[in-house]
Image (tube, rainbow, N blue to C red):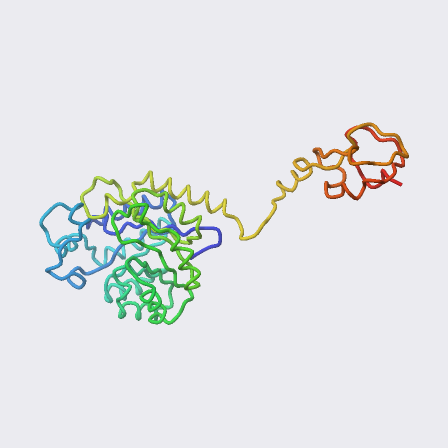
Length: 337
């Protein structure tokens, strides 16, 4: 799933379908148009994961201005199992990877039986030991968001899953939106070094500059919310990218992928051709007759590098010319006795 020099980009559709299969398919179309590698939804039974007394989180209350409870809101955003099957097949048709975050054990088993390519753990479930233990037994790649988690809780993930291979951590700040000064992108290389696994970034910042920077810092996965229209009613639309901005983000990331190259100091064939043109070499700075003894005053350093390199200057001082030489003639060892 993760390829060298190719950031895996997840278009987080989430619940931006507003409970509509038709809108969910349009989100798949949009993610495909934008060039994402995968489109991800959220699979849950609201009654299983939200208590009836749970109040809306601040960003939900701000973006979904009604008096419904969190449970009532999420029940309106559910999709049925048969609808997810249809979306899974629609993604196959569109040649984009279908992913979904399971919010409960029943949903995780359903998605695994659907044969998803990978599983996703949301930040809120990083302490859900039942869910983590089950997913560890599926032998599929697992992407884990780490919003709100401390290092011990992240370390416990590996103990519960009982492996590190194909486990990918996503640095995440669980604020919607996340101010840029709170993004703390240096967490990405820190997590890579600390846990020795692939790391990415689940980006909740208003735009996509942070995602670009995350890739430059070594993120292998970028997850970013996508919407058909930021003005739509729902909890996540305002903190999502519209189709045009999402496509621009993907294009920018692909440019960064290309620019990063290898972890080495490598000269391309094109650059090698410029070595002699850009560098300077030793030349005689005037006409000099043969048998003359060369001094420092007889030598200049000029482009192109067609004679000796400048490092040879002090090795030829004092040598005797074997023939006449001209001004700007490259200096070679065969000029001397």
